[in-house]
Length: 149
Image (cartoon, rainbow, N blue to C red; front, side, top):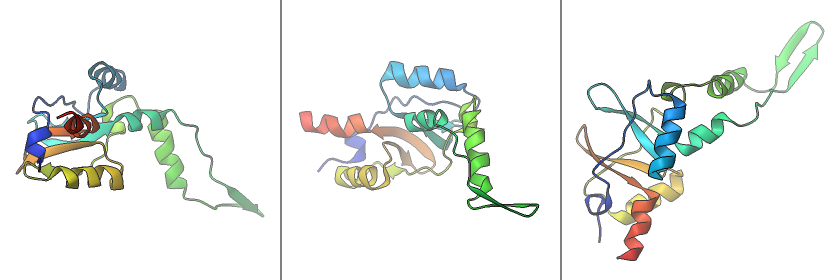
């Protein structure tokens, strides 16, 4: 059975949190990839950002339902969600959209486990780690390519 090291892309395209979203969109589009790891100045993985994060930025703003009673206003939903959505809509850099919770695998992770992670968690860009060092990345295309061999 194939492992992560057999299918991963070793020349990993990364961005920093200061990267403008326009530049990120260009990187994703030109390289035909779903997402990229976000790294710090030392090259250490700090997050991930994907096409879906950019798409989510352009969605309609959901205004929470409120009830007015006398002079008070009660939110029926969390106002924090609205604040988060407003921040996403106004985002201009990777830092404002990227996910800090990154699902990773190591080089020996079997491909069936990687496919399970992708389908169950709806995560399609997975960094491959050797300890704290990123050694590759696996995207949907890498998994699909295994059907061609």
